[in-house]
Image (tube, rainbow, N blue to C red):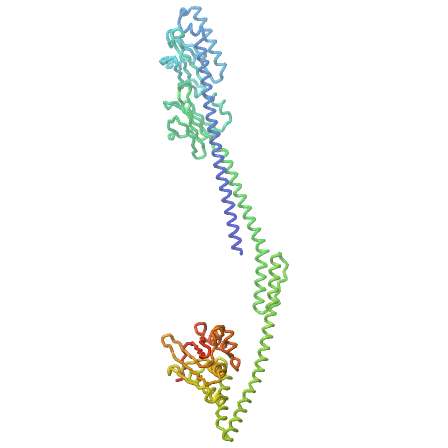
Length: 569
């Protein structure tokens, strides 16, 4: 029982633990998908904000390029170093300074004119970084975003230069360019806010890193060996980080953006699930201990007590009653056990009474055995009186009767040989000849090999008696009884057949065993049914008694028995 309880506890524990783990895995997968969707949406929003920012810068560049004074400077119509040119430059300087106040991401704005070489910037230190961009050949629809070489310590670490062509509206010829120095740090900080990113990186089509953000406390710069240029969007998990890679078109310039976010939510959930599993395991162990105690107290203990009571009852103590007061089920079982003890005690008393009655019957039977001895003595006295009065027939009949009585009163179940059985039949016929004279004749055909075969005592005599009383005598004429005994050696069978030519019976009378038994019943009270039962009792179902009879033609009865040879020759 304890092992069964432990097995049940283990099965329940494994089932609950498996359910929790399955639930944890599904919840973990769901949260991963949810976090992937969040990172993907954040990335799309970031790139959308980035596009909007550069669209605004492009719009500002168009406004500056279309200004009347800027167009006059581009055309170069004012005399060099004239008051008019100085006035226009002062206006242009004021105009570009106004642009830096509109967007906090713009650090400097410069205007360059090729035909009338000059560079006008809000910060004079920015002019040196524009020498290379000044030489760029641009078309009127071109927009360029190039990294800015940071030479000053005060400059932002990741800045780009947005270059827009300065077009002469009269000739539609590019006369110069407008450059906006843009701080990507400021843009990204405004976009991300406090979102816990592990890394954000922007790269152009040439492989130049335009922006890289690694928050403080994060591991060093990751290895970019697994980052391949691809314009298609990608989303994957690596270790404890979700990685999103998307492309963005900024005024004709294609960049690749890649962000990495930690599994903050997943880690918190994993810790919670682990704590939940540990708590559930502890509760299961506690429940198992309590269940074991209750199982032992309410099931194992009463069972052991009932087993001890049964052992006492097995040794003969039928007063070992169940008297404990436990649960309803055990009380009902104990009551059934007590009733069983009472029934066993009554049965034993009944068996003892029957044994006493049996002994009394045996004593009475011993007393009744005096009557046959008295009968033998009386018959012997009659025999000697017959001899004294010279009546030998009476003496012979009495002698035959004595032998028959001795045979019929022998031990029940004894076997005799065929020779001895035929001798008893001759004694019986000797008695019947005194009554019927020559009216009844007996013929015997015995296989010599069958003389020493054993058969139940007095098995044939009742058949001869029935043949005389119920076959020949009712016909009121002479009759003959034929006894045939032979062996079937291959089948190891003994056949004993008694035939008479008496009145016989109709088919409907002897087909029914009960009818045949009542019709063919002999004087001693042992009929054909009893002979059939005796054969079945001694030899089993494979052997039988068969009867064949026809009205006014006679009756034939055949016994089939196994061959049992007597050891005495």
